[in-house]
Length: 486
Image (cartoon, rainbow, N blue to C red; front, side, top):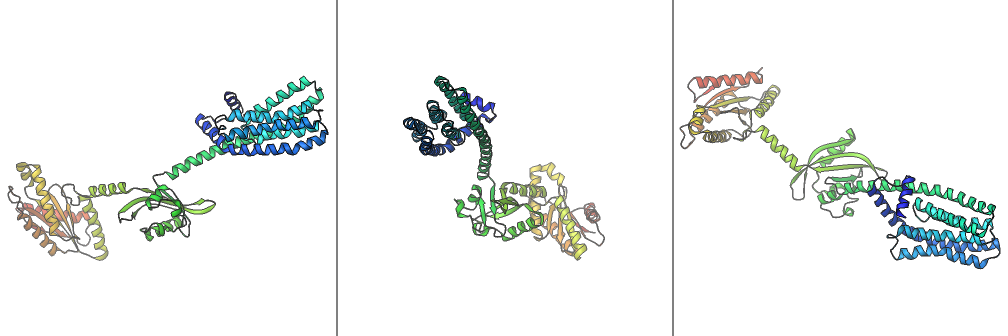
């Protein structure tokens, strides 16, 4: 029977092309219609007992036959109820529904054949079970069609056997076919719409499953009150809540004690101005640890009302990696000082500040004397150690507001903020002296040469840096281990 029904479903375009989806539909179909089948079976029993007296009034005889047929007809619904109660309906769905509906329809067919052939009786007795089969029992369209054809075939055989006239058979089939067409169209449309609804529900369920189990935090808020209307599992975890009921109806600040009001105000401002917000924002957890989340917030609709939809992805590891990479890009890996690129950036800012506020700034460039000899004599590892010690000394010799950078291989730069030429020259001399006093163990004394210059009116970065470089060149030319100001 399943194979034949599968053929009919394919023929009428009722089956899903995806076999797995079809199996899920059939399982869902059985589960959803089990209680409905029992309910309709009970209704069918009541209907038969109600219209049996009506039929008796119409024919005014054959009361015993009518009672037997009614009892025979209700055996179909009773058959269905019995097996449903025994929890066998899911296992033998097609067989039970087919035989229950067949018996239900055979009762009126037999009654019509063996009575005085009153056409009104036929229409009372046969139309009701046909409608029930197609529209109420919750069977598929193909199964209902098979039942109808079976009942009609049995009726024709009985009609011929009983010797009914052609006009009686024609009128009976006319009523039956007319009713079947109306019911079949209804059943067919119900079947198609049921499958479409199932597919939509399945996609909705899958979408809901994805949302519920998403690694991202997804929450929906009321626009003005910022109260939670929905939150997925990840949101519950991040807010230390175990159930949705614990946060629904609560304000975001009640649930997230460490939520910054500035961040929320910034999000709302962007929503009002641009219609959406997308940025990485820092959030503190209950232990005070900072996490970074990429938050995308926009207006939407939920349960027919305008809401704020927020999706947050934890990007703490990425942000920390980014900060680390940025630090690596701006710092010299050996000495942990700023590199030349960062020094250029800071120097441009100080030039702009000087032009705006007339705040003095000076630059010192230091070069280690005869550093190539150190590498050639003691090796590059020792040379690296020398660079690290000199870098430490330079940082300790200036203020925290000053910038110390590795300018090149053995060259260092000091950007001295709010410092005029005399102070800058004094700092350079102090650095020169302290480095000459460093004990490098097996290495002879290390000295440096320095060029110094204060930023002047009309200076560009290139002109300023060249003047410092010329001063350094002059210091090296005049015997090294000295400071020259220009």
